[in-house]
Image 1 (cartoon, rainbow, N blue to C red):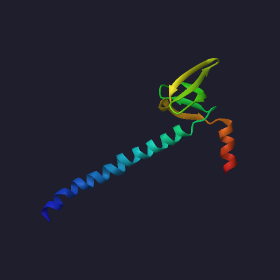
Image 2 (cartoon, rainbow, N blue to C red):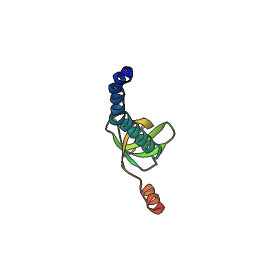
Image 3 (cartoon, helix red, strand yellow):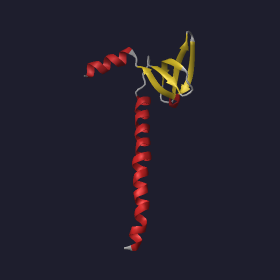
Image 4 (cartoon, rainbow, N blue to C red):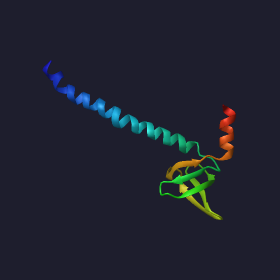
Length: 98
């Protein structure tokens, strides 16, 4: 009985770390991967470096953004930080599915 009681605080600490640190991080990673998978042409995005642009072309590994008139820059797909505005066709598809 004495051995079990000495491990109880360690077990409780692991459970607390799981619910406060590990689980929320896994949830954020899952949401980010879903966002990266849902990218479409015409979406306005921001990169992790702060570059704003509109997706002109994309494939499995890279995304080409138009950042100014006749200026296209290619980034790794993982460099996209957030979608600022979805493309009009994506918004229309979302409304039709409701």
